[in-house]
Image (cartoon, rainbow, N blue to C red; front, top):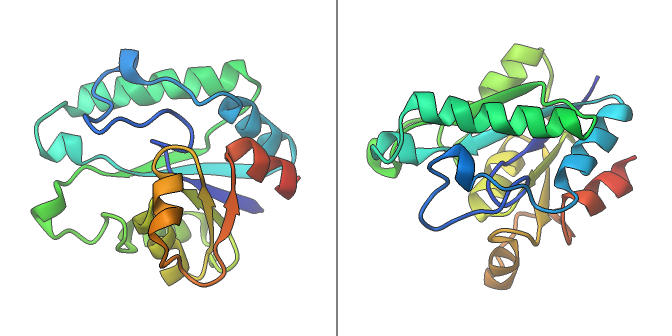
Length: 176
């Protein structure tokens, strides 16, 4: 089984410093839906891993988060792809939970659910916390320059072995 882990905001859809708080605010980055479809056609299982502290902060509720994810699932399906699962951390940054990236709890749950070692599994993100979480699990950290990616690259200190691509479409083109 080929598995790929994708952060959501800044990788699949445009990010916002004010959070994505409604389905209307969720807008795909050009080429990202087609990239997911391309990965699916190459027998990748696409799993989304996303910190959603807006829930813990009370900016939106679980019903709204589910509606946002429903819109994403439908948009990916219309492009011919499929998201196998979405794992998320709903906690605020100060909750000190184990699932919020850069910690590895979310990725540990994915490894357990799929009964796989994440060593070498591509993990695509736009922030240092995405890459750090991936690297700490032995996954392959991949930085995309969409979302906060260019800023993340400029700040340096990327985990060893991090690959850098302009966007998710370029990642998919390389993997398949």
